Image (cartoon, rainbow, N blue to C red):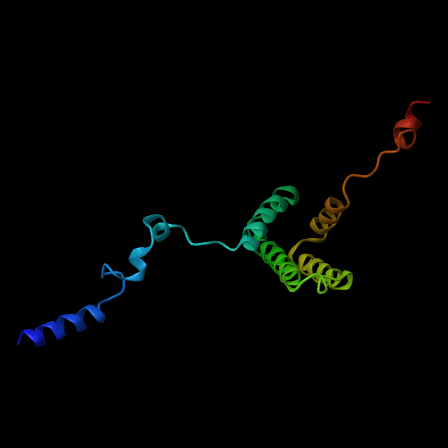
Length: 140
């Protein structure tokens, strides 16, 4: 009888639900690991940040932001995948193709005026001519 009881107790411990037995592998982790926030994809975080930046600069309404975020995430994820393949995969032609697809997707997500503003942001401010332009013409 005692031997049967020992066998039953051993079997019960073996099939016990994970996390309830003291010898369970999940119990060996620290409290901080168990309660830590789930990891967020860094590429998604970067896309989220850039979306907020573009939303401010281009004055994107909330309904456009998910589409812009998706464009950014796809572009950044594809660049990340190319970088992971090594320097031989990160060719000028491959990058140009990714940029072409990124701009095509943005053109669908943005209005023509917003897309033009986006292009102007990428080009940066126009170079100021030190002795030319409208300032020089008005001073004479």
